[in-house]
Structures are given as structure tokens and as C-alpha cells.
Length: 120
Image (tube, rainbow, N blue to C red):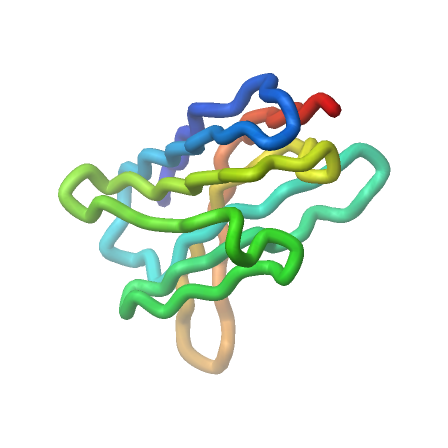
């Protein structure tokens, strides 16, 4: 089992910045990738950014150039630096850890979510 605890959300004005953190504990050796997802009211949860154990990174088109995902392996912590925030970035942000097994099977772990509100 993997436990994920997010922090860093809050209220910010448009154009501002926030940094989210996600501390992982438990069976972290089983994690192949970690990422951030978000869910806005009335919308489906969507991938924001993901980093694999090998260091490969992907971003949603809507956040490219504004958000940066990073990790500190010594602290078992994942970060999301969010700059130039827009009102449409308002959502609950969830930390995700994925363990990949054979035959394409995988298991996702989720944090409790941290809300981000961007005012115009």
C-alpha cells in the first residue's frame, strides 16, 4: 500500500503562483510513476502532469509552460509548481501514484486532494 498526503493548495489571484506537495509513504518501491490530476466542479478528473521513475515527464497542453512537476527522492515528495495561474485552473488537485504490473495491469493510489481556487 502507498499513502499520499497533499498540501499547498489555497486561494490565489490570477497570475499568481502556488506550489503543491505530495509526500508518499508505505510501499514506495512499487511506484512506477507519480502525477497530479485535477477535477473542476462538474467535470471529469484530468491529468495535469506525470513523471515516471525514469524521469520522463508529460504535461497537459493547458498547463505547458506554466506548471512544472518535480520530485525529491530523498524526501519521497512530489511537487507541482504552478505559475501564471488562471481562473480555469480552479479545481481540486489530486496526487497520484501508479504501480505497473505485468500484462498492462496497474494500480492507482490517490491522495485526499487539495483545493486550488484562482480568482479573477
